[in-house]
Length: 213
Ligand code: ITT
Image 1 (cartoon, rainbow, N blue to C red):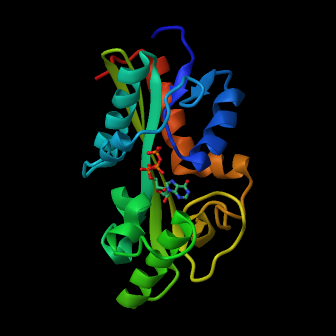
Image 2 (cartoon, rainbow, N blue to C red):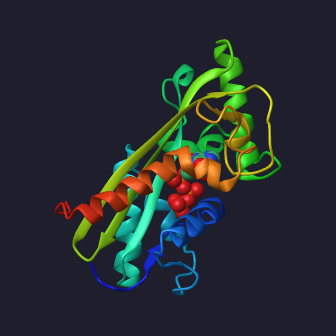
């Protein structure tokens, strides 16, 4: 492992809000893509076209490592809903767009949440609906790649609760917290979340000295 600060390779402001303090609390220096001078480009939209969280996470970390020449951490994450046969899954960020709702007013998160409720009401299954968040974290340093997975279980509620978090959080009620992730503090969410677990497992894997893939 080289000594350089790891690049936090994400364009998601929500992920950055969670991961910067998470790494800082563990004494690990990370820098954002803007700080290393990597401005967004259209080509990034085609990085994560795979069917699994793992392939997408590795693709993202490798993409940015190749362009920065530094160790890069990335994650691919999403919401898996039983009543929707696992959707939106790896398509979580693009769920509304996939359903032809890209033109609906509001933020991308609001459109995705509207799409989620619309799909669930079309299925007609009773709520709250069983779901889980999944995250695969990846670290790429030169030719070496480490990955780790984290999950957390919950229920999708019919009406939003809370103003924190991002994405589907106002509708995701954590089984462990008994509240939605949007009602939880950053620390409480990270302690049980798919992302907190995936990154904790990633650090443990790197520290264990197990060979990278
Ligand atoms: P980067 O690829 O640049 O990291 P992204 O937003 O495209 O950003 P993903 O491809 O991993 O990231 O998609 C994650 C989507 O899954 C995100 O937009 C949310 O819709 C949902 N999601 C993942 N983790 C979440 C969380 O902790 N809370 C709420 N929604 C989450």
